[in-house]
Image (cartoon, rainbow over all chains, first blue to last red; front, side, top):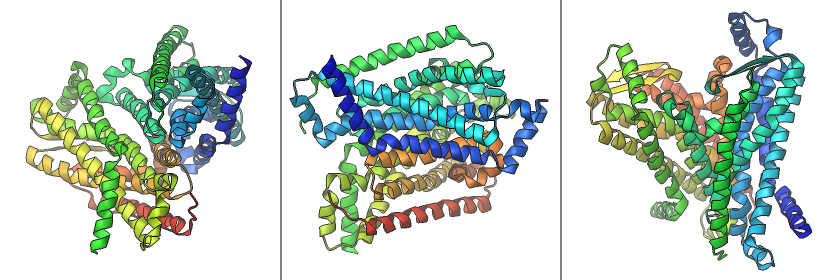
Length: 281
Length: 281
């Protein structure tokens, strides 16, 4: 068991040494800064003030650093987080296969199951680090730009609407983190699975993103919204439900149980494919 | 001139000899089938019937292959186009650097400018091929499902609602696909630019996708309405104006001037970087 953790440590070290591992961190920071700066544009603020006035709400009651952080974090995680996690998960096996280092790893007296498990854990830890970074950097940037205040979150597609005081808002924000990580791990398993099938890293990344993008198109297009309850992205975005005034725990539990079932299928699929593969390079 | 055409031919041969070039074509067909299947559900048809009835039009006349084909292209064009154009254009130069074949290419008595120009032309040709394929298969699938008829165009984001007779609609559809391809050339240009930098193919692809997805996310934010002209995706959607009853040519010219400027800047930047790079691998 001790050897397993030593090998996992090396796997993490290799992950950290790759420049592409840091790409998502830099991109998410750039996205959060750009979004916060755009929210400072006078014409944008005038539009928000008009909408707040229509809702018969005071500016200070609805617009704060916590409100912008919750919205920007969601977008940053959905776009940059998904891209970054897909990139790392697709490269972790396919990249080594392409570089020819996988054969060397398999020369050691270590089972393929152990190698795959280490790579999976490394990806899951990366997803946790990226999720934590996105959440904390967004919160810090938005609090600096807009200051503290109430949290108001609206997500019409997911049927989410909630208003909270700062302390409760912070609690909900923290509560969203583990669920976001879980969604991130589910999103990671598609590129991880493709990565094990002998595809090139870029192709594995794009194929998994195509699946998620198609699913999202079906979920959000009005003409095909009838199929949204069956979409994977509907389940992956369940973390947003913690921002509802009353958290629908049974719904969250059901969605994450279904995601877990999908995850187990993908892990077993990846394991079967990886064990039976012949690495020629 | 003969040598130039021969080199272009060889570049195209190389591009179409790679398996990942065809992933886009395969994915387009699969996604269209999925979307068509969802759109053929009774609830989706009822929704369309309601839209047609609201405007006092005949359902039978406008629920046609042309209408469904255009709907599919509108919903999938930008996302699928972005994914697969980023994959191919992000790969085109950086993959050769990674494989070490670029050094051999540079051994020949051919200028670096010519190599960049040829590879860029290859990306543009691929863009047109993929989009024409997307347009043709969407139209084919739509026509197989519900036959010929008039064209109904409804795009709330572009504030567009128009109807055309079958022949005029088909002509608009063909012209529309050419302009969509021209629009998406900007994504290929971005991917190509990143491909010429010193980064891995997967990282070039992800960087391109980040820009495109972040830009289209900003565009969808209702409060950023006053900033719309700044976003690339606003101009990328200009092709939809070709379906308006009276085509707003001035607006189209402005949008395409913007996009062509983006293409030119990306190409020149790529050329500048490529000419100054030292290839050691």
